[in-house]
Length: 388
Image 1 (cartoon, one colour):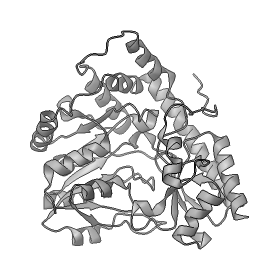
Image 2: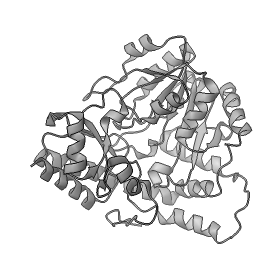
Image 3: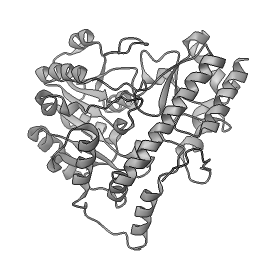
Image 4: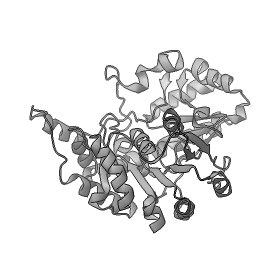
């Protein structure tokens, strides 16, 4: 089947976050939104059909987790990433950010250090801080050649550091971390008794021939010290259907984490989560994913070509995964406030301000290109006119 990703989708009346909070967050409602990380493509019909079949049975009482859920997810991970988690390693969690909060509360105490590597997804900072933990920054080496600064990492690790939160693939820069990098990170953390929380929500959206490497798969040390979080939500545009999961290979870590989750009844999926997940991780899902990734790649190239021809002051960093483009705007020579004013008030665009991702994000914007190409054309034309 050929899917039409150019088809406009009117999201009005759906209560979508992307449009409904523009005035609250940006000060005006008339912006073209390219910020929050969901796509403007319709959720594929085979997922909608699976949900509709369940809706035909109009009784929505308590349900059990389908026995085929975790084997389905495990087979998908094995087929795409060469790692086959065992069924008992899985647990449902009510969202990845919530999962980070749960891990923070299970494995750390107020005042403990939690390592993050900015610029990085801002809840990695907000969740620990909101729970009274100490953020330990280990910034990536500067753009354009982002790397984990292992010398800095060994310096900042002290006896009070308990967790490291890894974005794999990286958000916002779209980096697919190589196996040898993850092996070195696992060795450092395992030696120091630091648990690695690996957020792998963008793992099924590797672009331009890159391949995602699951952190827990790279070595015995990685498996022993890691908790992996994943979900079909980004890839199949079902973020509103909470369908996240944790994978914990180590039995001691698993018992400690899952017993707490179970005691608080956070391991029970909502009625529609398994249905959507199993429909996504099906042969139909693979075909849709393949076409969607190809369309996103073309969108990335469109942004690159447009900036090269019309906006040479802007340098989009080509993502190796995901539908998010990390846009280097430092060539404009604008202050933080002036850069935001350019995008919001002059170009009437809503992007994510790079500074929200922490040190190293200054002068950048995160652009969501998971949208129709006509929308990207309009957005870039607005920016071009504003700069003119």
